[in-house]
Image 1 (cartoon, rainbow, N blue to C red):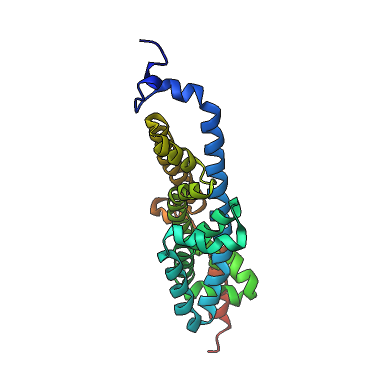
Image 2 (cartoon, rainbow, N blue to C red):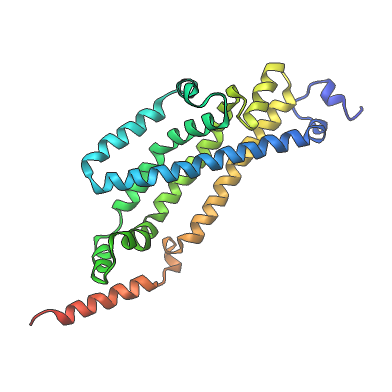
Length: 246
């Protein structure tokens, strides 16, 4: 059998398709990664201040979480249709929709991480003269990092999947190949693009898991070591005890 028989036979698995369309597959994968990365990064940038608002003024927590949940419940086709008058048929349309979908997971995880910071750590930092901004960046966010990164992992995997829906406006990365393959009944293209999409989600999750383990070594009990802040906190407590009136 010739090398091109699988294309003629329209087989699901066809090595010749991968070889002959390699550049097309690479371009679609790069677009998929770019849209996903831009959506997740923008989502984190929007979710962080929303979580801080919900933590600072508790009466805003329910409305913020409620709105993000409602946005997540909107079907993707309806979401893109609602955004179409503002962004037109562009990559911005897809990225904006994906950002809105990401908020419900990111805001909840960031808020949960911030609320889980021990009050003793905050008080010790304040006792050492930490201001609100320094307290946030050097104490609260590092301690909330496990929950934040867990939210980023979930969001990234779901965004990889949702990016394929962008194919309806021709900005879906691998989803565009999947949709075109379904329209033309091109089996090899559908299967190859779908497999790449799954592989992309798994690879992204594993990379973020490795990053999470690298940035949060204290979450592994056998590697817990007192850090600079912990030592300073102990010193501050000792000083406070000495300064107490008899």
